[in-house]
Length: 133
Image 1 (tube, rainbow, N blue to C red):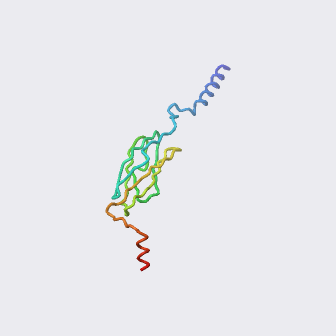
Image 2 (cartoon, one colour; image 1 turned 90 degrees about the horizontal axis):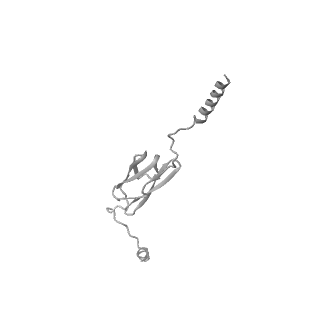
Image 3 (cartoon, rainbow, N blue to C red; image 1 turned 30 degrees about the horizontal axis):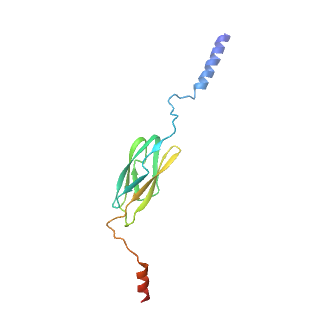
């Protein structure tokens, strides 16, 4: 009888010690990789960035001229980034954040100036001389 109680106690402690263990847990640190810059056309441009991660990831941005799909994923996927037409001849820069667990990286989006909009040149010397007349 004492042997049975002893065996039950040992089994209880073994069960308690291994209850929190999961042999399928991935102990690898999170990985998040992608090209960190994308250049788009000034006339409604779009491009693709390949994201690789060994965990779930999410995408966000504060720039209202940028849209992207998907907004989240896991593993390796293509992120499609679209920019509305640039209404100026100057380039503009936006930021997309991609996060996976405790890692957050930025994807810089550079949109070229719109070639259909002429640049306005400012020559201060000419303006000042005309104002003196």
